[in-house]
Image (tube, rainbow, N blue to C red):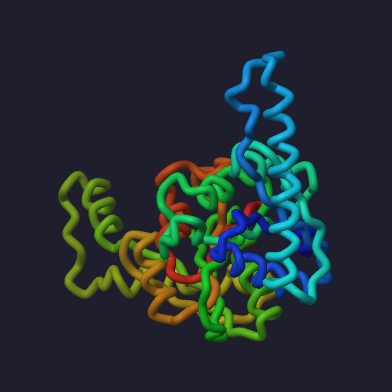
Length: 294
């Protein structure tokens, strides 16, 4: 259950979508909301005990006061019916957000995919991407979109990815939407692996349809994942390299939300650069919920 939602904002219009989606989630789950802005440190380049520390400290205080003022304005406009705690932190943006999320014990962090860069897709190294990579909890990367009534959960069928299916089911119920669960199969890689196992002597029987057999097996596993989570939904096996296949299928469906696991077969506690999850987050056209295992 989501009970504490932290929304990160850079005070740009791009953050409004994060605030709106956090407000909708909070109203449905009765969660407590905090809105955080991290402004650059004016003391970063000032030597310790230097004579000009005092003016720099005064500047930091003024920046904090201004940040609180702008935060209050943005919260009032973007989430008028939601009571929110407002926090202004000083320092590095993504590090400050991650640190506060942990100390505040957030269950969910919401960030906007579009900030001051005004790019429709997150550039590599963006604050949003860094937050997803290092946050201790699940992260919702909010993008503007229409309520299509479809939530897509992608799974690699490993045990650590099952929470993404459960979270997708919960989001579908909250949004009164249809749940679709998918797994991507790269048939080219499967066939190459079989050839390597046979030391180059792979010659399938003319009556053997590898594609259908793999699809049937994956479909059975997807139904098991739904049953394991006590969820109701439909399944689909998409094909091709995982990240591109999942993003393409989400766009074909017109999904309003794509749910993925932030921990897959690598077994790493944090996402690694170049992982399938990161590529999905950075290239998806809809909001993405990256579910981190508790």
